[in-house]
Length: 237
Image 1 (cartoon, rainbow, N blue to C red):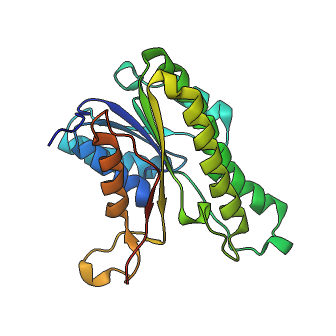
Image 2 (cartoon, rainbow, N blue to C red):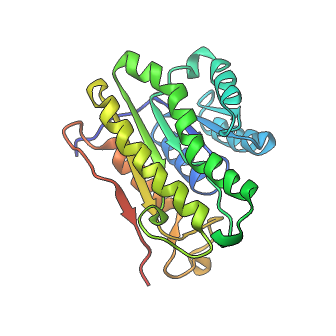
């Protein structure tokens, strides 16, 4: 089957140390890509990177950054060693939710969700786009949510952020289309995190992090002639 070979291409995954981000990091690494796992949790990303580098030396890198802080992002990306400096694929995965009703949601908790889940992808995309535009190639995948299409009680800030992320992605795609840069969204429903140790521990009707890794691999390895719409993923009871 004809697919795109991404061997030795470089992927930056935000929130890549746990959950969906880690599953995608491991999958892209298994495809022969070099992966940059980014998070504020330095010790955790170092542990995950060490595991990947035991499989293939010098193929994974830990990058400590805060997606809500432009200076942190810029400084971290500027410190990347030469062999990891040209990012081909960006996975905007970092996000957070709260369980407040909108009527009494504290402003600081609203800001936490919006800044991490919506502002973060904007800032990180902005940081890597110049190099993608220069080489006229690149792929940005946002890990969105079914909350980007549906409103849920006790999740107003998260819904607002994910709805906004979809609009951001649609506008960005139009701006970078002529540079051969693709912008895509995965929209999962409830996903079991952390991944269960066995099939017996899987929650019925919930997605698994491996399902998101499958979807990311599918999107990234389609032939260039294939254009995909956003992909929604839902568990089946």
